[in-house]
Image 1 (cartoon, rainbow, N blue to C red):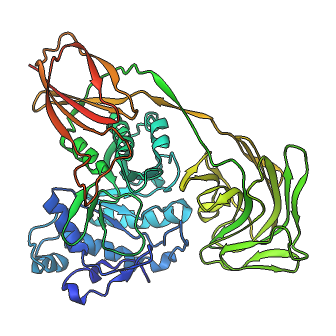
Image 2: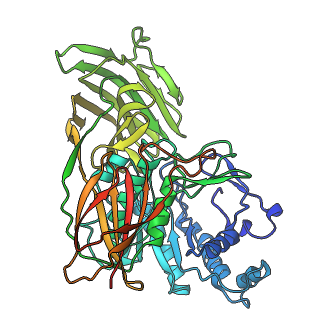
Image 3: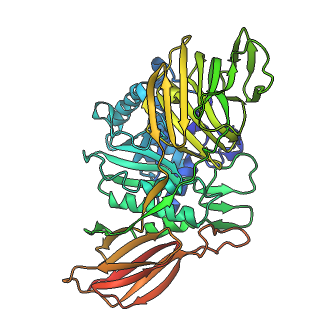
Length: 571
């Protein structure tokens, strides 16, 4: 019922009913399907239309429409393509012309579903794919994927599909450490679209350091241009006058009379305007830098969590790993005295000797214990009663912004994962493990945390065995080189995420004849936390200079905290 109906987003704006979206507020649909197509045309962009695959958002509350009810939704997609591309003699093409655009919009790309995955998605994906290709064989079809996995397989059911959509919202640390994540993807002819990405953890509302990480990610994308065909930073716009939920980092901020762009916007602009046409073979010899890592694993209380699930918990035991002392034992047969249960979300009851969370709608969390506890083992029993997922356990909970969670049967009861929240930023600290929990069955759950060593057991079977590194290895610089074959210009793109200038030796093929003067473009600041605002809209913007002294073997000073493009003309 709450899926977007594109036919209700066209025509007279005053007559559009609008809809309540998944972010908790009502959209007027003032920018509807026609405006979306028009805006893409006005901006010189290719429109990419994402259609509902007959499924709700699986990360929130998974529901799949019965297969025998799908046909109206499939027909609706066929009509949407006709509205975008059909001749004025067609039903929907005529309506497009009536709305002021007689020429087709030439929609080429269509994605089936967004952040959907699994068997239920595969079945529905194929239904949509077959119908669309039968009517519009020229359409390029994009397949959705799991939204939080670091590496999704390049998989298409029965080889149906052209492009896989991957999403990456990550911290600077993750990006700098995983810059080579795409290098070993199989080259099968299928392509990848980075449909949503941003450095939006541990960077506030966005700053230069986020832009440096985004630039390093763009370097990785360009280096794998044979695989990655498109990329979209997300989101693009934020209305600062709008109340309610706001995404952490957005590229362009506006109100009723002002606008400014974040540093990450200028990174996207630099890469867009200086793409090049051909990657040049390069060898990057760069010292690595070991960066200390700081985790929120200094100690904390314990907790219990569910998401869209009703569950029970019992026989909770916390044992010190240092001396074996029992720090807490709770079987819920009598009211807790020293460590009472604190309910933060959900509907929790202590009844019949168990802790019962009865609300299967959204997220529920309760906790107990001492924030000074450290180096301990938590064990308990848990039972899933109904809903879409399994259950969580929380350890080392200092406050809402610092904790460790083991998610058992997450992502629609398909995966186990360990998540660490440190100073308000979340990170998955181990590969996800496929797994699920059965309904109405007690499970024995145990997690042992000893320093940076984390061991997770389900029914006495070791599921995760993680030793967190105490430091991360970054490259000293991140770089890629492209050739603009039309203007015969070499574009050297470099990122220095550190506070010190880097002396770079650039060696070009001796046979190349290079102009001695180049164009230098850089985005930099002394403080990597610097950003833009309505009051100071141009604190971090690109600078353009002439650079003299280009040679086939040269030393270049790469500014601290900088994204730098050196454009060298070939004779």
